[in-house]
Length: 263
Image 1 (cartoon, rainbow, N blue to C red):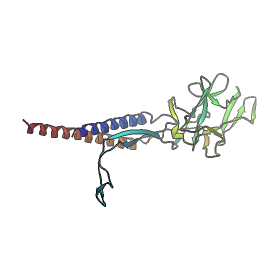
Image 2: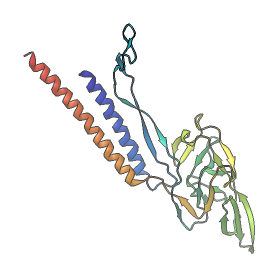
Image 3: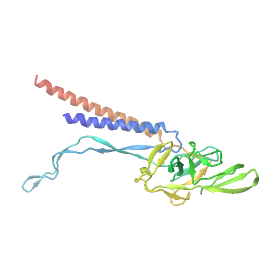
Image 4: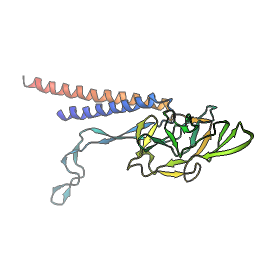
């Protein structure tokens, strides 16, 4: 009887985590390049009263056993890297990735991070940076008098300058980074991910080749959060939480009835 309290408590705790995860997904429904995550469950170790297949008598085996579960735990949350919708912005420095891959940026301390957020801007020196000022790698500098910027699907950056309005020149080429297991990346906030042993080592590739997506200049990738699905997840979590609290109440009522017998 007491086991029911602890088992239901694990279920309530797990559903609270589901609620937290779903709330984060919904909070980032408009975050550029955000990738939603879902929670993975595992059942806890079982108390084996009678082992399945055990020997009941000489030459006889038990066809079934008796194992009592002890609840559930959160095994982890898996981030889903499906491509979000590409939305036209009209800003030539906005870049959307149509497919797999990440932009590589350098952060203070000499380390690198990876992002799907292609909302790049120019700093005072004409270098491409993120909204936080982190440099896009490899570093690219556009001419100060550039009047038009075009980004090709293969990452080629073409510019037209005020000094040569009838000539298109190549200012550089963008690269993308792939991982064998992108779900193993560590989310660092600010739309950035960090490499981990689970993600594998970064592989720099040309956009559109070797499994990397193509680039779309003047577009941004929106969040891949599906609001309807997240609302369904909220309802399921709420109902599961209610069922577990009901189990606690029933166990309490049964203990109360047992206590009344000895009065």
